[in-house]
Amino acid sequence: MLVLFETPAGYALFKVLNDKKVQKVTDIVEAFSSEDSASKVVKLQAFRKFKDTKEAFVATDKLINGMLPKSLEKFLTKNVISEDVQDTLITSDKKLANLLKVSLGIECEQNKKTDELVRGIRSQLNNLITGLTETEMKSMTLGLAHGLSRYKLKFSTEKVDTMIIQAVSLLDDLDKEINNYMMRLREWFGWHFPELGKIVTDNLLYARIVKTIGVRANAAEANLSEFLTEEITAEVKEAAEISMGSEITDTDKKFITNLADQVLELAEYRDSLSEYLKTRMNAVAPNLTMMVGELVGAKLISHAGSLINLAKYPASTIQILGAEKALFRAMRTKHNTPKYGLIYQASIIGQCPAKIKGKLSRTLAAKCSVCIRVDALGESEDATVGEECKTYIEKRLKFLEANVNNQDGGNNFKRAKPQTQHKGRGGEYNAEADMSLGPIQKLSSNFVAAKRKPVNDDGEYEESEKATKVSKKRKPSE
Image 1 (cartoon, rainbow, N blue to C red):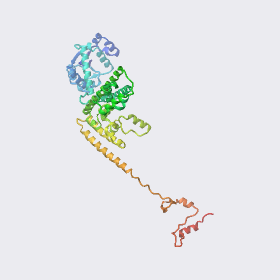
Image 2: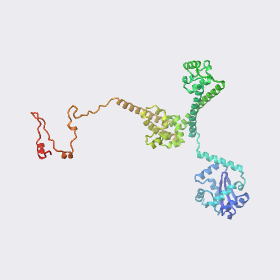
Image 3: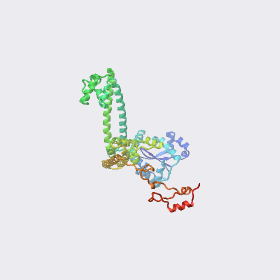
Image 4: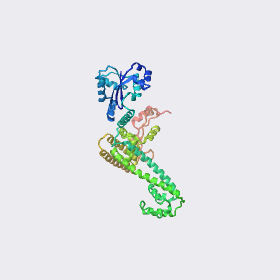
């Protein structure tokens, strides 16, 4: 009985010396409890070492994909087929056993007992294989594991959407932190110089002024013309002279200035991160960037998890991506579903009238779906498809705006109400507007109204002959 054992260092073939000890699972466990007892059960018959990690990776990759490596085929041919060995071959992999049976005609055995035997050999592997140290085995195992991990991840240096996901998430976090820091800076420095908050509304300019002047007493001598206009500079200096704020100590000034430095550093890092994100998006998804911009495109990729996942979504899903809570709430309450999600932040949606935002967002989502699939699955690196789709969206926007303007212009004219004729309110009487009596009403009536002819020359009505005959046959009841 032979045992084929694949290791990260190479292929090993063991000969089972005592078949009786491997008849029961408990006997196998006891047999491999120590090095001496294991050497009495199995013995190394042949060992083929890999030349390097690359050869080990190629062989392992073929085994994973259900193919027989050439190195293993040569090893078994030399040590089993050429030697005309009649022993049964034991392997722990069912797929490998089928491959060996089909390709080389070697009968293999695989069951619970053989699995325990392979497990026992693994526990004493370093002692059973001579000429292979434990340190060498660990290094080979680590190298093979890293190679397989890189292969499964299919790492690409050109298109890495993971970097985009991390960058856009960090960008959102930086915006929140900057806003929190600025709110704290305005409140803190506002106790000392409250008038400055009304004069300067921009956050970065406010932080620069705080860093430059320190306290309001230094505003008159500070040089603020580098980042402020002359009018605003004069207004700030004038307000500093008549400010109603409280005084602060040097310690307060130190911490307030440090906070302003933190805000400016975060803002500078955010600008550099924004440029990095723009560069990455132009490399990974140029067509999508052309359609909705790098920030919205990166948020779509981040929300989907990857560019490939986003390419699998239909246009209707891309349209409402980011509005899942509103969608499920509308479905639960049976209200109107949302018309857009993250693509609402695109500039082309923001500039169109409110009446056509839904229609334009549907068209934009359809074109974005095309651009995403070209970026994810296409081979071109330019934004040709994105430019064509953007031109189409702009034409569509003009068409919808023209329709809205025409409808608004037509609503200015009041429609004439239809004239209704009322009985007894003047004007000519319209006999055709009256409803005729039904047959049941005619039969149940007590008399039949005689039809009258037009007025004669004497000014009297003349009854028709038919009406006279009917009135004679049916007299009205008393």
